[in-house]
Length: 77
Image 1: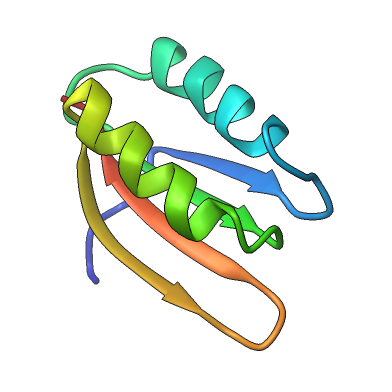
Image 2 (image 1 turned 180 degrees about the vertical axis):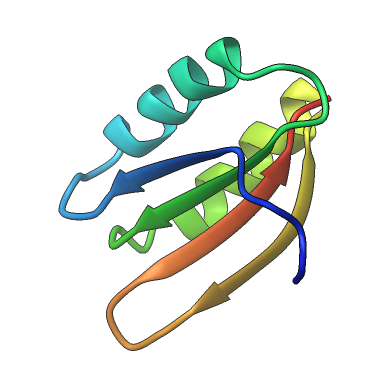
């Protein structure tokens, strides 16, 4: 992915529902078209963040994971 990240949210160590609540705040502050990176460690974000994007109309550009972290790249609608 070669896009420039406009905002980054590090929700490492936080458990559901905190990562999604923090993402909601970041998305309200972002402008349309911004690319937001989310870094999380809670496995429930694998379910919650895609549903968040689908429900609110944001585009989940990509997601990836390592042994200990999950990364999400979201384009604000």
